[in-house]
Length: 115
Image (tube, rainbow, N blue to C red; front, side, top):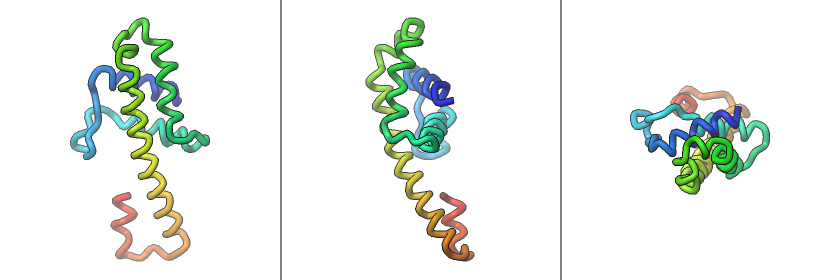
């Protein structure tokens, strides 16, 4: 599954497709985040997902030369997303465990909904 996400994201970035900060700016599915989440579940750390780009370039670079030409940029974009989404995940997990220990109050429901 991680290989598929790495391939999809690498090719999309090489084609110039990117995601904005807001959902309305999203121009492709959030595959990097899904791949990062799966990686975190199996113990990968920040930076591990972006290292899959080299394998994608090795296997598909002959057919898609833009992957080879833009490898370092693709790795930077994915690494940046890993760092950003990693912080978001950590905050969300912390919020979840804070709420588990106490009764979820009505005034905090919006925080859970927006997480």
